[in-house]
Image (tube, rainbow, N blue to C red):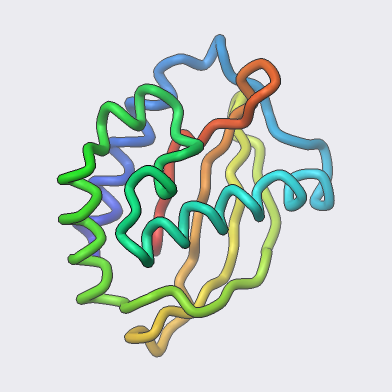
Length: 137
């Protein structure tokens, strides 16, 4: 599981290299959750079905460059083998990190008896919200 954390950490570090372009998403839990839930839902549907276009729909350009379709499929296979398929989640809250918003959910996956923390890093770029990073921990 540590390999996944390191891989996604490297992706996030590359994606946050453009902080001048970013801005936080929402000012309170209701605003952040309203924006983040549909993005995570799209990402998880794409992940579960192996649909790279749906999975990466909200990625910023840096993250899209770092996570090719081939890398996505390899990572997806490893995650399925270790924690299984996504089943459910509950929103925990968010953190501001510089000009990005880190959104947190507690999730259940089919092969894991433990809760899995989903961390989704978002930033507002003009009128669009982009994904800068994602972790399943």
